[in-house]
Structures are given as C-alpha cells and as structure tokens.
Length: 220
View 1 (cartoon, rainbow, N blue to C red):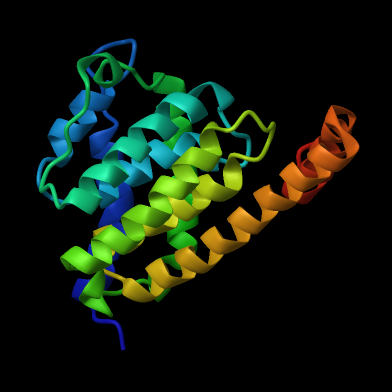
View 2 (view 1 turned 90 degrees about the horizontal axis):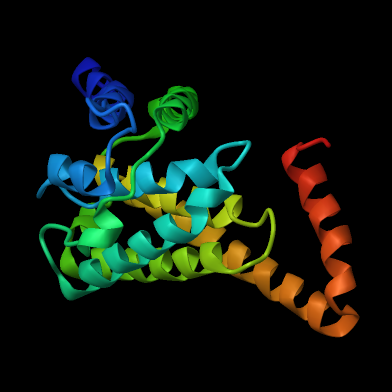
C-alpha cells in the first residue's frame, strides 16, 4: 500500500513544475534558467518541461524543433554519463512563453493527478548508468522524430519523453518500461507514414494529417 509520505512525494511533482516554470521576465523563463534550477537533481524534470509543449492535446509546433534539439543534446549527455546538463548559449536563451507555461502546468497537473496513484519508486535500475543510457537512447530517437517535418506527429514521441522524464524523476522503472514500449510504437508509426509517403507521394500527407487529427481529437 502506498504510504502518505509517498503520496505527498508524487503530488509534489506538479508543484515542482510550477516552481520551475515561474518567470520574473515578462517574456518567460529561458531553457538555461530551467537547466540551472534543475541542477544535478537529474535530467527527468528537464525532459518533462521540454516535452510538454508538444505533448499537450493542442501542440505548440513552434517549439517542437528547438526543444527536440535540446532533448537530443540532453540524451547524448545522459549516454556519456554527465551529472548535469550543458547547453550551447544560443539554445539556452530560448524562452517559454508565459501563457504556454501556464498551459503546460495545467496540462501536466491534470495528467499527473490521474496517474500519481500508480507511480512509485520501483525497479531503480533506471538510476544506474546502464539504465539511464538505455532510456537516453529512446529519448534521442524520439527527439529526432519530433524534428522531422511531418505535421501533427510530434505528440506521440513527446509523450514518450514525458513519461520517461516522470519515470526518472520518480525512480519508477516500470513506467519507464511502458514509455519504451510506446516509443517502439512511435517508431513503427513513423515508419508507416514514411512508407506511405514514399509509395503514394506527397499528396498522401493530407489524408494522414486528417487521420491523425481524428485520433487526437483535433477538429478544424
């Protein structure tokens, strides 16, 4: 049975995100400021923040490519075993719009409130070097998929990265395994889309977009 101490720990993740995304600047908080706030606590929180704009029900496409690039860099550093993230200055100055930050906090809080009862520290192999490197490889693949110029297909890999971030933050190896499984499904989805486009040409993109919209519930 989950103790009250464990429950309060999981409930604090949404509040932690809220604190991370607070900004004194009217233009919003920068990626480097978020990275400094996270420090050596782990890469999980940073992956959660960076994946949220694309993982939202109504994605923010302008963030998919730059944030995908940042997450790819983070994944490479995790594979190398770095303790804290390093970002190029130009990338670190990218800011998260305050309105988007509020939307990210609200969306993350709602999602976490639904799954928090199932999250707990278990299978802590993900905190080891091999575990983190394995998950980092999945993050790297998902981040690269996010950067591909395929409309409306950023949400799936972003959700995979979000779940890996939660798994790392909460030391939940089972959740990370679930994210890995979803990541494999995302790869198959992209392979299928690329195959259809190669066979049918660029005119196949519009039907694919309509199909994805129907899956995620986006109406015109």
